[in-house]
Structures are given as C-alpha cells and as structure tokens.
Length: 89
Image 1 (cartoon, rainbow, N blue to C red):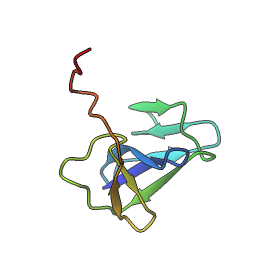
Image 2 (image 1 turned 180 degrees about the horizontal axis):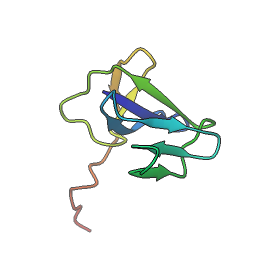
Image 3 (image 1 turned 90 degrees about the horizontal axis):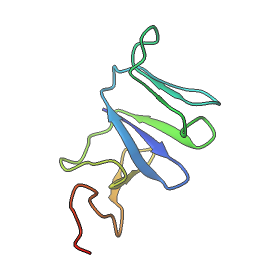
Image 4 (image 1 turned 180 degrees about the vertical axis):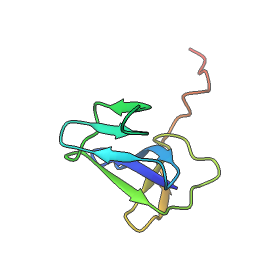
C-alpha cells in the first residue's frame, strides 16, 4: 500500500494500492488512470504532501487517524475523533 501524507499536519490522508497511479504536481495530486482520473486532490501538492510507498497499514486505518513516517512507521494521532461517530450536543 501507499499513503499520501499531509506534511502540514503530518497525517495520512489517503491510502491506495502500490500499483495505483498517484501523480503529485506543484498544483495538485492526481489519482487513477491519467486518461480518466478518479480524483484530483486540490489541496495536496508537491509543496505540502508526500507519498510513502510499500507501507503495511494498521487494520483500523482511517484518514487523519495516523501519521506515517518516511520509513513506514505509523503513529496514532493523539486526540483524533472518529468523524463517523455522532457526538451528543
């Protein structure tokens, strides 16, 4: 697997297979077949993100729940709140 890490927050934002195309440019990040893209990430580019390949992902991975070091080491983000769980007001 590979992850796209937001270097401003040091969090893993996206997770895809190693053979899935991810192209990071100065303007944005393109994901999928270049002739028919699946996604363009407008807020992540070569100035504020990095792609780390060959990682073994935590079983409970979720976007922004973990940081990932260049060597593939995962660390849980302290204070992360699962956005799928509704919090009572």
